[in-house]
Image 1 (spheres, one colour):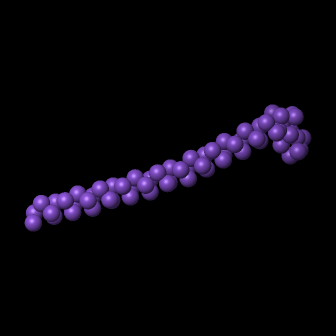
Image 2: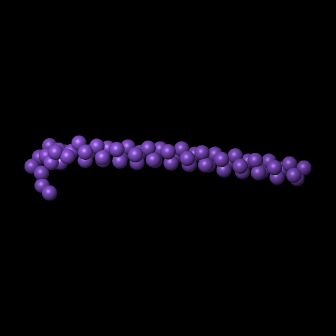
Image 3: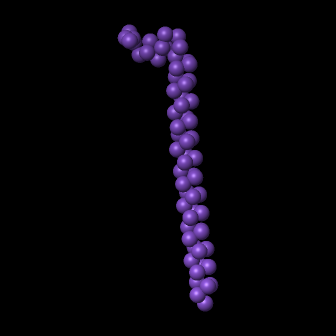
Length: 64
């Protein structure tokens, strides 16, 4: 494939809106996925920490 100018490249033979729109939606979805993944990780670590603390407190109560 060869284009004569950058404008031809971005126009993609008249399909530029569809091509670049698809690229934009895909990039947005990937960024959103990374954000949601980070939030889930924080939540999971928080739950693990809370469960560990609860378990330690239960063990201390049993010993006394």
